[in-house]
Image (cartoon, rainbow, N blue to C red):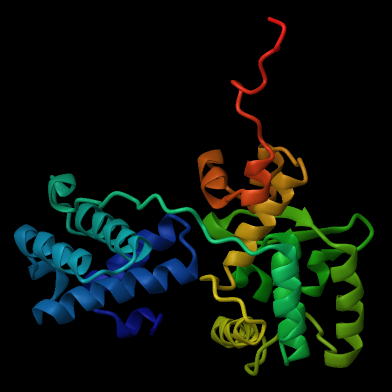
Length: 286
């Protein structure tokens, strides 16, 4: 996706300006411009020529095609910003109708399942990345953008710079993870980025880590649906099951809204089965 303003049409340049003005991340900027280009390709004309009825029809097509909620949500956020702030259209709420978020329980892996998967990751570098992602509750993009200076072994913390929403935060550093990172250092000799990619100064691509995770999961014989992001859900769930309070988990995950934290947690069947109904807790002598 070209980011040089010289390669963008005037309306996309203005959109880029509006996004940069709001401090949106480079990744968000890239996705928003991509969604606008998809809109233009669909109608074979520039975005300012797309009528409100056409925009509404386009969103309907995307929803009916079975795209994920997050994908549709990006389109809605993108088009609201573009049509309101760049084109200065009114009444966007009547045109850009956001679908309801599906209320599905996130998939969670047990600690045993996670260790079984990690044991089968062939690439040692990928194994360290996945262990760091799980043990600190990171998004894969946050793990891949870690720098050596972000590892605070004295206080056993990891500093996350410009996570989702451009927020910095601290999260926990596992002792086992620290041991693995100390073995990883002399082997791969990172100088700034902890997990550098093939291009100088750039982190590794997440796609390769996802592929390694899928292969290892298959080798481990684990059939339940899970991706690298499942490690983050599992981190939150395992902390709650260890009686860490929800507010602390929220801070470690970097969520602005505690309801997002609650959604990311799926208590195990074993944990739920240990809870007694208040009816069963009655005093038999009462």
